[in-house]
Image (cartoon, rainbow, N blue to C red; front, top):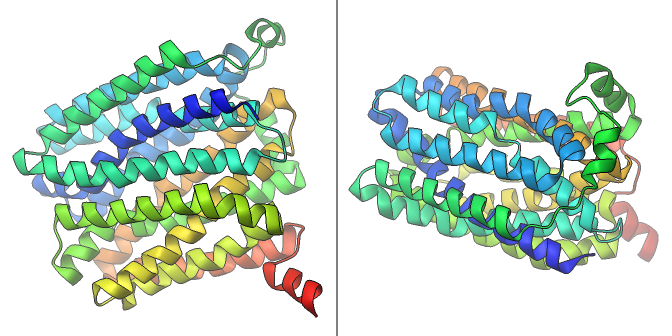
Length: 397
């Protein structure tokens, strides 16, 4: 495992996600300023993911051919442009345009994941993906709290601050990130940036096809919650942007602890597939517990379970996927995986917003819990490997 490369990409992704975490909890409140209803707020969250859904496999394949560094830099410039547009937006259509621009170049996460796969061995890959997840968590520790603080001077202030943060990430990529792809050798292969035949081949691979479908369902359930939580906390607990920002910071702290401290130990102890299978019930319990969280203590417990599950699921599913392809296919495969997650993030906020508006404010979380119950049944049937209960039973009984 190349520690220098890991540290560099960790710092770059942290800076990038600091800006993202700064804006994300504020989006529903910004949209409400333009008289957006819950469904429109869900569509706003979905707009970014729809264009990321299209872009992620293309950007991943291009990074296999032209190098991680160049494509990561381009995607980060798109993030800068998106945040600037967000800061100057004075109508709801401009707000949508800002998210679309960011989404079109939103393949930076799959590229960063491919970079991690490049510089780690199979044995250490889950740990490396966990470090990437910890960078996410750190971004969500400082970003939401900072965004909530800056929003008191107007929503344009955190938007421009986020643009500056994203600009620093892009400059850091250009100056400090080492290329891990042999660009000359890759170009001679003349790979297409995207092909439906390649997608069909990927889906036909037994483990990969199931992982892509499972990642979609996890993202669908999680995003149904994410797209409506700010409204739920406002309607149920009377919260505003500041309190929501602090909760996201708590989520970030939990995520960092899980992925830097807990994940490497449980993967070493039980194996990637067992940990992955354990993560889904934790996610489901956390999501289904939110409607029961009538005070802050219960909410912290529910979101804690949610973060535990998410922190164990994402790195292990990415690591398992990368182990099933050749090195030359890391970017494209992880791009397809990220694209499936983006599709979940497209449909999840729309589903959550519609359930919130038509059924009840608790409906998105009940539905998410049911989706994850079905997901667990699929994983149990089609993903090889023991559950943690089976391993404990075999070891002690």
